[in-house]
Amino acid sequence: MVKDYFSLRMRATKEQQHISGAERIITAARIESAAAKLIRRAREHAHGQADVINLTLELLENEITEISSLPIRTIKQDDYRLARDEVKDLLVQLGINKQATSKAINLLAKGANPKGENMRGAVIMELTSANRLEGDQFRGVRASRMDYSGEAKERLLKLLEDNELNRTHIPEALALASKVVAHRQIVAELCWSDDPDYTGGYVANQELGYCRFPFLKPEGLGRGGRVFFVQPGLDLSELVDYLEQKPVLVTQLNPNIKEYQTITEVITNAELG
Image 1: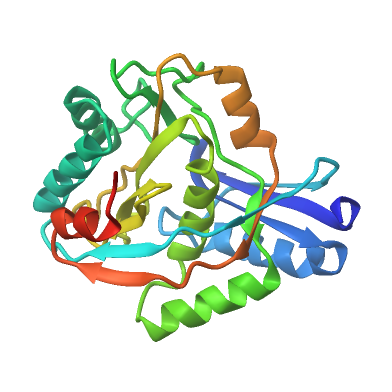
Image 2 (image 1 turned 180 degrees about the vertical axis):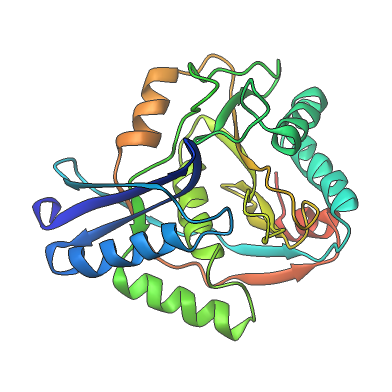
């Protein structure tokens, strides 16, 4: 199985600033069509047309781990400030220090790298101390090498269409979140898009699922990113290797899609222990 699959990754920059990234796990027959789609995506991004587009094609020699996607839960809060309060409450319920939750939200709102700009990868934050653990705070740690099987992707797109959910941003975010929180040391992920035309974001947790907020930032804001909240005393090198190198394919789709008004409803219905 492994030798039949390739990792195709795209990174696009404009004036030396990262503006777009995407990837696929594909068979040889799909290389040309997938590459063309990723190039078109880089040339039509909301941040502007890229002046440098890098494509990396790699034969996958490591064993592919197959996982199920997270359930999708929508919290229907249309004020991004109130939505961020809901995010803080949710993260605290998951055992994350209040200082860490506030710090994470402020980093994404202002730009997480030392120059106040977006990072290519994610912040890794220790959930009790709020310390940042990623070695390079300009780049961060980029979760990579994940995708859907063809059947799972088709089912997901149909499910999103039936529930009138975004078919552009959610699939990639859901695949990434499903891989990220499958790691035993990651308690939760916080993310919102740096696309100025997309206001959505989410909190992901293995038990709670993919909790999406349609409005987690004001429209037009080009700041965003990801924070992975991790347990104290983790093996950082093992975690980074998993996130960046371990190929993961979503082959099973969790069809559970529900809407809620508050985080309290989500937690109550999820029956967290």
